[in-house]
Length: 110
Image (cartoon, helix red, strand yellow):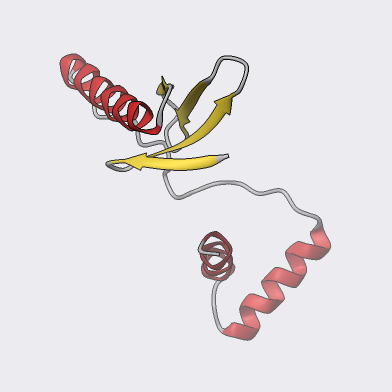
């Protein structure tokens, strides 16, 4: 899969060989924003149009565009891994939250 973006919206794009059509979906919001096109230029224009339509829809309803990520989430892991992570964080002089955030930041920047 390939990605593309418009403004702060990131989308995954696939090619449907049978339909000879690219289609995509914005992935960094819970709201559903999709688009499609037969060429890269059409696809770029369709993404921009879909995002602009979404933003206009939000304005018309007096709503703020959806931003689902609060900065908090629950992760269930094996107790031994929990202990190892907490110990590693203490060795670094960091809280477990800061240690995990740094590990996630490193993992997502690769």
